[in-house]
Length: 170
Image (cartoon, rainbow, N blue to C red; front, side, top):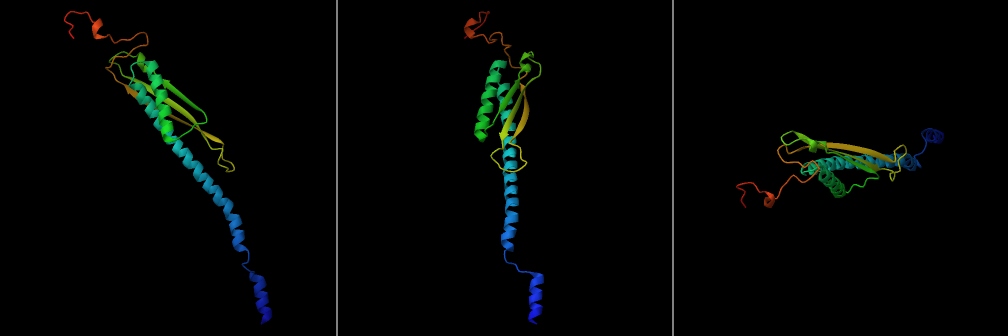
């Protein structure tokens, strides 16, 4: 009878050390999965922030009366938007297409903001994960069709005191 038990014990083996072995095998897998979740979350958050910044830039540019002011306001809007979201780009590029300001009053015109932001992923130590990802977003906003636009040559608005036409009153 003793031989049977001894033989059975040898065939089945003991469980001693199996938990340590399972932990040693599963821990790296779980760490990699956690790292991938952090990376995907960071990229998703940055994509939303870049899209929001492009929207804010196009909207801010469309409210201006000339192309130079539109570019300046759009740049400011991008900085405020990305800072507000807590996004830091390793490199970024902001391009504002202000060709719509050349259209005459009464013609439909738009402003397009295109933003590229390189999100940093190098601090996430996951094998095979790139060190960065470039995210790009573009947004187009209409310029008010019937609002006067300066073409960049001079101010098209004339103050009341310079209006010498007949019947001009204060």
